[in-house]
Length: 315
Image (cartoon, rainbow, N blue to C red):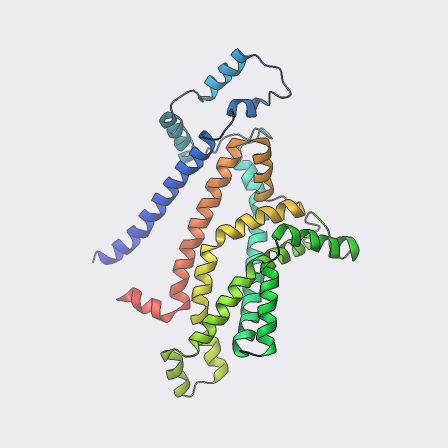
């Protein structure tokens, strides 16, 4: 009777603890950062202020209070949905993030879809032709792509397709055409380790007991690959993709900066440059919650992908 409730409460408790710990980290990153937060907000490099005026502003912001009190004030604001104000624009951090999130979400989702398509296509080709020129060509392509820094690849794509061939825009959206080069850059950067992992997992899955049993029952080879081998091979790939989500999002920060996309990554770079602490806090918090949520979705996806996991969950 209590088992279903325990299975429901335990993950929820873990997620809540992770989010709380994330609020502590995002607060301390800014609270312990070098420099004076009051000066960054006032931008005293362009405004002449006396030390008394700066001290009064620090007191107004509550920067002289103990860390515990400042954290409680920060946490209370989060519970009310208040992420603070941006020193760059004077708008709320929630407004700035909400304006930038759709671009980042579109870039990330499109890149993940392209990456999975590339991984399944090249990984299956390499796994079904082991030791042949196809396998060696895919491996060489993975090594070459993995050795390219993302920012250098982005600049190379701009030079080729935007400057030399003039086929695609170098920056901005341009009715969706500007999404192609950034997604290609992220896909090339992300796909190589997943291709190698999927290729090895595919080969191992072909010799597992349930595959042998299905083959002995006369299941056609094409149906066997699609319904059994492919799904079993996806589990380590999805696991690694969930763990590597932080790398994807950090890569999107570089790509957005290179291609001038109006996403969260570009906003974060500008916030760090201008020492806009409230935006940095909001970025860390939103990024962390997104990673926690997607990793939870990855865990749940195992039940859909693998019949073995579903059976274990029912025991």
